[in-house]
Length: 289
Image (tube, rainbow, N blue to C red; front, side, top):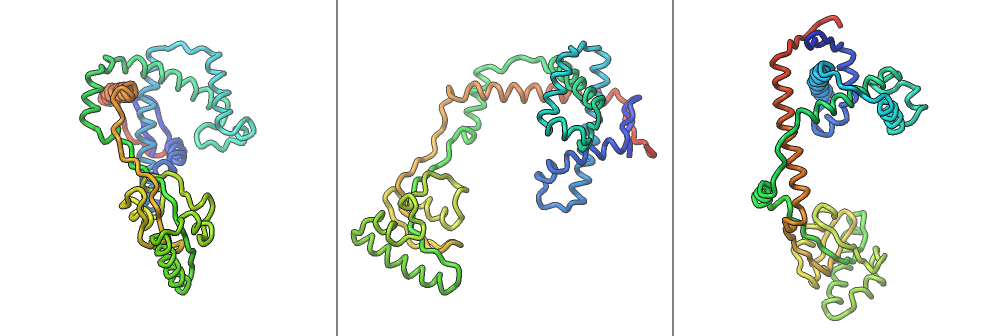
């Protein structure tokens, strides 16, 4: 259904085009939902965004911003370059922008929106004290993850019989290491993953398959694991180093916090501005367009 925002009509086909361009974004936020639900959510989001854009466009036109034609031409060239080049643009496959005139309007609108955004988000800068308060309240955001450096021995297996044999072999190899055999020597001679002497590099949580990770994070440096079964076969893990999590000093993240809080403050102010535009506007659904 089309939407009329004051005197500006947003046709249903335009909302549908916008929804098509938003479908993948919405799908990522709703991975377990059926396609029909995602399509409806994309339509709702497209409708809301186009209402906001219409209100912002109307307001920016009232303010009669002067836009440099050279900047518009440069913006058009940049947009075409970022969206597949001239050949791709000439095919008119973009869900909303089909012609040079469409693109010109879009670029001018972007410049107008940016000017409006700049005017309506003027606010007090975030102080260092505010940034420190946020830092102290959310130490979890500035904590580095625990990192492990490890090596392993792997006996690969696919069938049930191979898993049984691989487990027996890994148990025997582990015993040899505990009795004094060199770990790297056994990796070279016996492991099915002997590249880099079985060295896996440094990794955090979520990098390894779950059974392997679960055991690796219980080990102390220099410790040898019990045999570990994964979908690849049976492993012996040797932890080489463990770097515990650390909180990044405030001085190292201060500027990023100030920037983040400043953007959040601007977003809040602009949302309030948009809400005021919506309250003053006449927004109605219109059938047949």
